Length: 139
Image 1: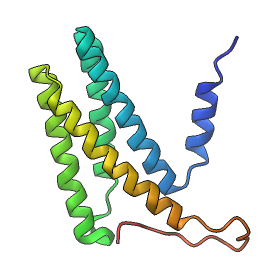
Image 2: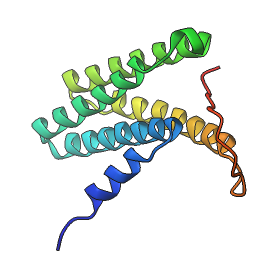
Image 3: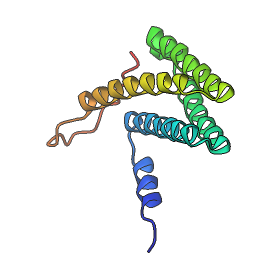
Image 4: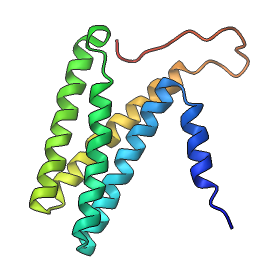
């Protein structure tokens, strides 16, 4: 039996709006942090480290994608928050402890909720057929 999951994820990423893509990145980071916490409990050092590294790469990409010119103060605040999350992930990996992972997970979950609300507000009604206008929550 073939695994349809990768195909579904590929299609979801390829068809994602910019807001949806950011949501997917947050979900990927959160999934990696949850995995890291699980591997920490199991004592699987290598798997924990790989999961934290994946979360770090995603958070770094989120940070690099910020448009500081268009995003103003919000963009700067997000950059600081992403840097703090990266610091938490490094601490969790080097000290092999859960509290920094739990805090990073909490922060990213809160940001994901905000992006989901932003995406819902930006989504056109189902009957909306005109050309879509680009919407940004970075202002």
